[in-house]
Image (tube, rainbow, N blue to C red; front, side, top):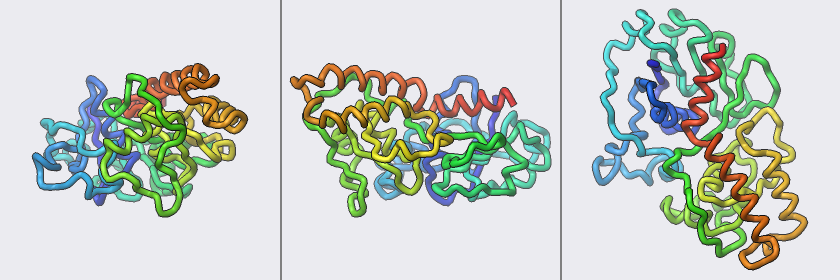
Length: 298
């Protein structure tokens, strides 16, 4: 399967770049990023390249600088579009229009074009809504013509072995003034790994990379306002399980679940359930595959 993956590369974008990473993990899928999505490649950053990972959005945590440079033919894109060389075209960020947008809309049909809308707002970009298959992250109303989609995590970033737990709450608290407690990803991840629970909540949008970074490190999200989140978004999250866990913490307190305390076996059972769901549904490959499955049925 040949996919054109395209947007104006102005900066990084969590949803667009998570899906791109995931597509690159699927056997038999050839992804042409045009323009080249430079921040996804290892050779752009030190010690190979000139850029510092910590200088880009989110200090470069979790998703960027992971891919090996591969042989991608970015030549003659216009002619390839006209000749229907690509099986699928993905506009990876609807507000950073692909330079090939008009050409694609002329030569491709709705069921052959994906639009990814990863913005925190709930606004639809009406130009692409009726002419492409539209995936919206902050989807707050059930709409037949719009598909839900969520953030995800590279499988290589997921901690597989259960870590030693030494503290109830992670040090990271998502409040004003505490946006980046850690300067490097290793320390950030280690904080979650040694914690039973990581506090999370709605940020700019309901869906937030923090939810997934907590789970990737074998920590359980304590999602403060999850009960108020519209059911149309974050559909890949184990919502009922996380709501149950929050209720149990509210009832018993965090200390109850610490090692050598009565709730420790229950915590291990619950964390394993979260982890199992995570590995199956919340990796970048799983989310990218769900897009392809949706398009194959359209």
